[in-house]
Length: 164
Image (tube, rainbow, N blue to C red):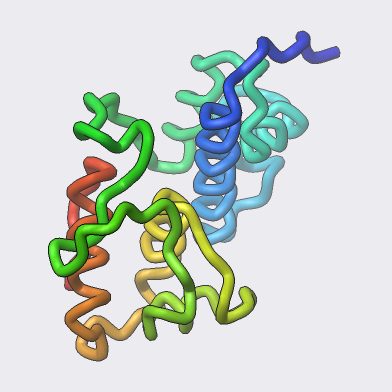
């Protein structure tokens, strides 16, 4: 039986869940079954599913094994000033942004087709949507506001820019 999860802050829980979704999306994009991925990582299928849900009680070592089995890596970076509380918008606007509205960006709308046009994503969720589905995007169709959004998200989240 899995150990009891330690108490986590809401933000930490959301980040772990997003991390788990990213791991799950990678496994699915590689078309690898949960059983095969779990075996490659040296864990049970149930532990892999717990990782893909972002459960905090799973050991960091198990997370690292799952990442390695899927050809992923993780890097610890210092937070960008101000990102802990809220994220600044692209340079064209100076009002704080806590969410990204799907309908405001054509390629994001295309990549997140299953969401309502007025759905709002956290910056991490928006970046994850772009990153996971970039192969389906049309970079030549990006409008300036969306290029700025991608550049700002990459900078503020400490990620490598997508090939735009």
